[in-house]
Length: 441
Image (cartoon, rainbow, N blue to C red; front, side, top):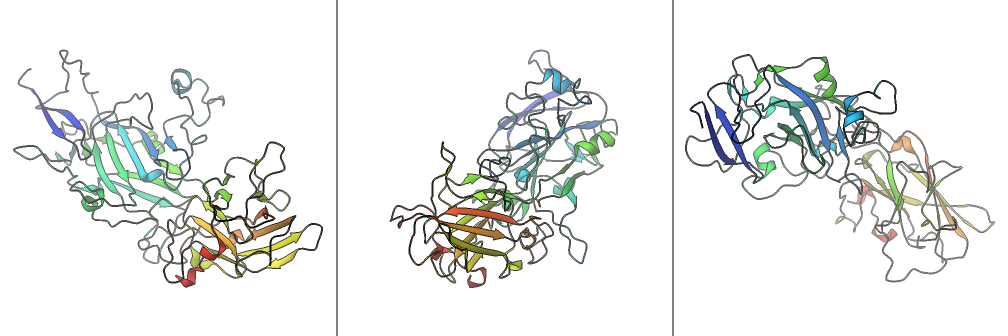
């Protein structure tokens, strides 16, 4: 190995062993080890990837902004990604749109390793021995700005706090990008839980655990990179280049605030996002709580003393609920619909001892504890949610009440057939008695 090249092995924060070739000058090109040389010229952004780690839905959502939106369109049909990439447009913003949890792992990928900031090491190594923890000299080398998100009187916007790190693993090819990340790059993580070890992202970033931390729905975010970022040489020849192509890659918009599932909260709720199999939420085609059956009639699952659960893609702000946020009626057979007072909440448990969880579960329960005095055959519950009173929770620091600017935007109608007999002790759904008004917490 020549004097101009020295390979140093060290441990990355997450326990991965990485071989970093430190050069006095030039690229890390070694025909003995099969290493390709670094591309010459400026440091360039090649893609932005976003990964929700499976937090938002039952399946993980991975997005790559460099992927064409739709390979069937004439403007993209001849793109190399549509012709040569096995994934084609699978991870593009149309088929895999970013959601509020997509910043659980947000990575800006470069054509070569971003090792220096203003000529100094971006992630310094100790002069002797192996590092126990690696951290950026300036975590603000990467950041987020947004439009269409919440804002306070001082001009601060709803951008979640993140743990930022340098990721030297990965290449520009991956057999499964959701599992084997592209690289090298700079990564942002909107962490919600904190660990206790020395490499805990919360400790390194100086932030506390926050179960509500996320991006805001229906907001446009842009990643901002420090102009002093460069590759290994740092003499101006490999400084970061931000042109129109890079700005386009670094910008994305999250999906709208919306329901994902409806049901009784037993882990088998019906998916309503992206499918009309369980209704559309309109008065004509309400979301169905009944479990789908082969004959299309549906199976009743809601107990007379049970609550209805609506799962949302973002936390909901309970401070704006009113007595009209949710209304309900019960109809028995061909009888007249009878109004039933209901409690709408995103908390459950016991008064003064309840938990909000992620605030993404909305519970609608009969205030009296039951929909009818006693179960009756043919009884149907119909619930109307006023979408204009379902606001998302602001991502401003501390999540101030009433600052969320995104709403569901339409009335949602839900319908459920009541079980004609008490469900018994094996009922797995949320009971009305467990739903606590937000003011009671």
